[in-house]
Length: 311
Length: 311
Ligand SMILES: [Zn+2]
Ligand SMILES: [Zn+2]
Image 1 (spheres, rainbow over the protein chains, first blue to last red):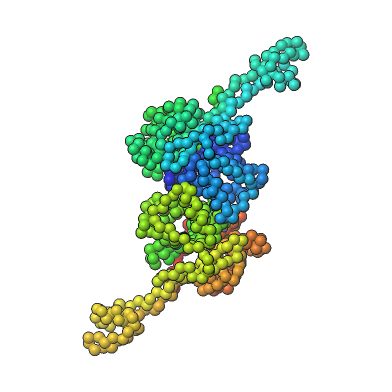
Image 2 (spheres, chains in turn cyan, yellow):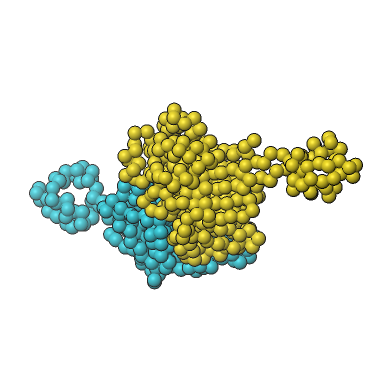
């Protein structure tokens, strides 16, 4: 599981930061990539990565501002062009209106997709996706249009059978292993009675990744980020610009730190960096944040962050 | 007057060719830039040029395929963001549907433009714009959606008064010059009678630039390109691929040459190059074309072509 940042700028593209798009790479976990927001030029950025558009299984849109959605029609069309077929459906989650935007764009341009496209517009918050391995929860944030945050929850990994330990104890392999894996007590052919629980590894907690849309500091952000491994938070403004951030419905780096600390996250990734913080000035944003919270980091376009399973 | 190519690829962005957009720079002529098509990422390309979005006065859309229009909403929003005001209106010309696409995109994203935006959807072909210095004529081409070509006609430059020659002949400056400029005969204070026509330079013919949308070879292309200084023609396919070009409603480089020669143009610029002709293969397209017509040239992203006034 990795996060790859395809665009880390705010408002409009700048030379070194494209507008927002974030890839959550779940290749080991589900052979899929999820995108969060698709600003204009996202497909161009993807060209420079090893992400394959046909692997993009879900797209979560935080809000409908242009710098977060104008790359969608192009990405969807090119995914078709590149030969995605009926076996590679794609679902888009987002605020009411996203379906109209995408469908109008595809209709007017007569783009006929070669794969099924589904929309889930958020009508109520809470769980918007769940299967056997992942669950996604969304809540409303505080922006000048409806903006959502997404909490991606990986389900706990089942305890693994310690095959090496079984072999060391000369437990013969076979259907017995299935019973042991369930933690049951079994009697071996040689008369020994063993308990499966003694042959199971530690349970590995699933990971939690929280990705928020543009927002002021607010309580829902903290709820979504509670104990997350990684929180991705906007940082359009810097230290001392709280008033400006408030007026523009955005956050400062230090407000993001407040959220991260209140939620007890491990790592805070700051993105949606204003062009006013070009080049080295972005490091200043990071430095200010790290003085308070060592787990803070300002990300760059094409930066990849690994999210390991906790031991 | 220059053409600057912002995107010269076909269908979808490739590493070295973005999707279509062409800037006709009329800075000396009218302190303005006109864009022809605005594929996704056009605003990103513009960032790397000296074109200022607020100078973009008109946008001509050839057809509604995504690779020709998906950059419009982003370009229009950023132009606003960069402070274009009520004194810098912009007009978009194009096929029926372009207004719906743009308006839906701006509405859904709540992008409120700071400048007036007007649409002229093509309901009949012929002259679609004319003022004292320029005229634009459009005709339907042959593509699988309505695709138009634009013939940009600069009006002839008025004959200039040869001030140096008047001084050499000791004609005193003053209100007389106005009469002479109109070609009238006047009597000088010293009794000499002179004819203004003898003091006027040669009339300079206005230039003609023809830019076509995606199309098969067809008669309207030739009409639009008649005696043009420059013809910009798609060249999605190469020599020997006429059948494929026909099936996909596109042209080969040699079909573009046919049009250029039938129309008697000075220069043929080949664009909309398929990713199949990557890197050096594009030169092959040019070489094949130049064997027949020396004025042919395959353009690259960011290439600028000057269009001088003919002596
Ligand atoms: Zn934003
Ligand atoms: Zn095209």
